[in-house]
Image: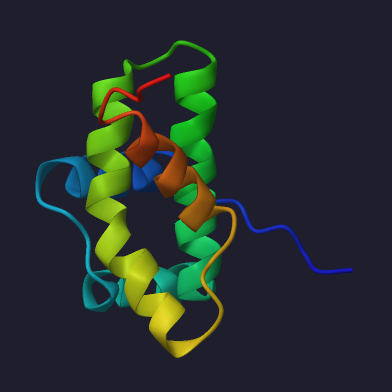
Length: 105
């Protein structure tokens, strides 16, 4: 059974803040991945799950979560170009993306 790795709260906050403000690219995540002993897909999944958790629990508005997921998208996409699309990160991105416009019907 794989060991569960804990990402310190301050690191999660810093990464999500960077994602929201300027976006994160895979190259920028590499230092964090190395320090945490995680693959990029694992870190992106953990960050995306945290965004979803906060939104579902009402700890942040949709717009903030959407900004964060948009900021993670480039890295999510880049990982998907090299290996399988990271899940659930990609599906969480798609869920927030669906909320960006009004659906008819």
